[in-house]
Length: 415
Image (cartoon, rainbow, N blue to C red; front, top):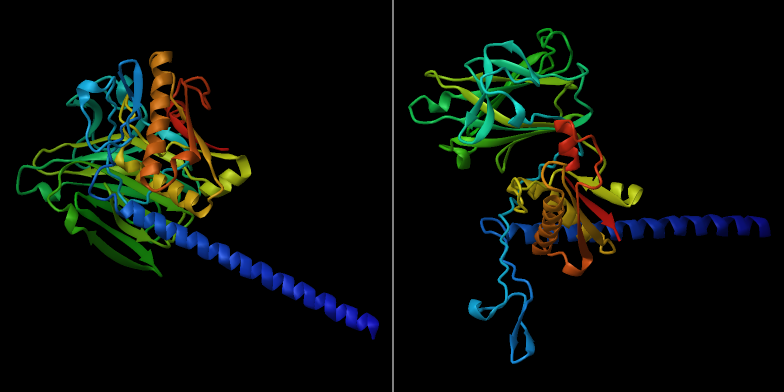
């Protein structure tokens, strides 16, 4: 009887221990969810307005005495200040939750391409394409119904989790402007970019205000069209971003998510691009980047003590953060709200182009800009330190466009 009583007591203790653990886990999950909701509200408040101008503390001298000024003075007399520091960040898109992959596997740097020649990083399936200059930028021009696809070392180059980004130009000026669009195809099997009817994921047509596509479901073709009223009559350059995660597919046009397919029904292994243009117009694309996805941010911090991202983007030779960085910054802010014990040293890194001293200062300015972007999202300033590393610690060979893209990065190192 004594042994039986001891056994029952032991079992009850184990059950109570499991219940206590589950209650604790539920409480942690609730706290994390509330933290994410709080962060989302803070980010939403930034929509349609830029970050607040930040003025560093500085001092003026009066009769040999120094007087401190507040970091955010209501007014200031610039003639009395030794220096004026004003930094304004671009607005973040709270609805923009696209996060680029961790590792760049294809990046088309057109700066070294010869004007008028066929782009060296691509192959041609149909039509005609050439390198060109639009304004001051190097671009790829596509004639009507031209199909190109990236040259890769292996045919099945798209991983299980990947992102694809590029900029496309939508010409305007006549009544046929709305008929100009691009076609994006994902291919599940390799056979010279063709598969048997019924196995092919039908083309995704990218219009200036939305998309249309057809999928095969249970042997039946299902067509869908998604147009967004806020995108109508918007021409010129548009940023297109595609995210695939094992089975789901998301597509973004500029800051707007236009489609979220929970189950694509196929595993893509490669893609190509086609142009559809009217009245002798030419299609134009640039900045094509394919990247492999990875683990969640917090999982990377736990495993490695840091995480690295190429998804925080800046203007060329500038510390101005591009709005397309909003998805990554939002995730970082949510993680830090959910895990209040996390503090980071933010390191900026550059590729090897340019002067060493310039790159060192640029990387420091970029790290500082990332810090203040997160502070604007509600994260305490004292949870960060910043440092610029310049080009001193490359993670890839600077002799390739992909290597340079991976070296241009921001690292968050746990403190």
